[in-house]
Each structure stands twice: as structure tokens, then as C-alpha cells.
Image 1 (cartoon, rainbow, N blue to C red):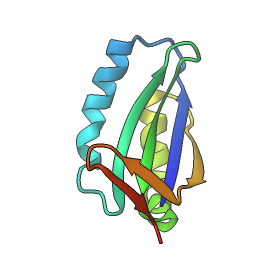
Image 2: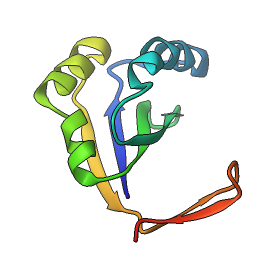
Image 3: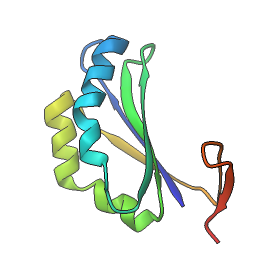
Image 4: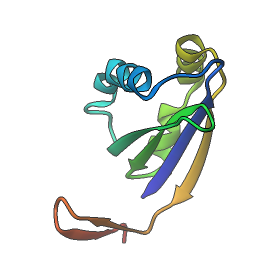
Length: 104
């Protein structure tokens, strides 16, 4: 499994409520995405940064999301460039399912 962390510094400050509304407007596009296990939106008001933490089945499926088209969408929606950081996740604890999940 792979965790991808996306981040984009906003060109002007946003409130938590503004961030929430932005996230609700984009959340439906991630429903049913192949290989995406979970997405968590986040906001750092101190750093004026928005982003997402994604858990993917594989890096290939993650990389299929962050295309030039996705980067253009971010640029047009938020007026800034996005960064993507990949982390290998061999074990995940899921308290909702009461499971420990390993990719092997």
C-alpha cells in the first residue's frame, strides 16, 4: 500500500469553513476511484496549506491519479501548484474494521 500526501499553499488565507466547503465540492470525484482505499482532506491554517492524505492499493494506481490533468485542476481551482509525496505503507491499522491490514 502507498500513502500519497498532496499539499498546496493557498495564495490567500482561507478559513476552516472555506476549506471544508472546497473539500465537499471535490469529494464526490474521488468516490469509486480504482485503487483508492481512503482519502482524508486536511487544512493547516498556520501554514495556509490545504491537501489530502490518500491510501492507495499500489503506487501505480496512485500515480495514475496525479497526472498533468490533475495538476491543472489544482492550479485552476486553488491558484497554486501541488506537491505529491509518496510513502510506502506495509501495515495499516483500521479501527473502523477492527483489522490490521498488511500488503503481503
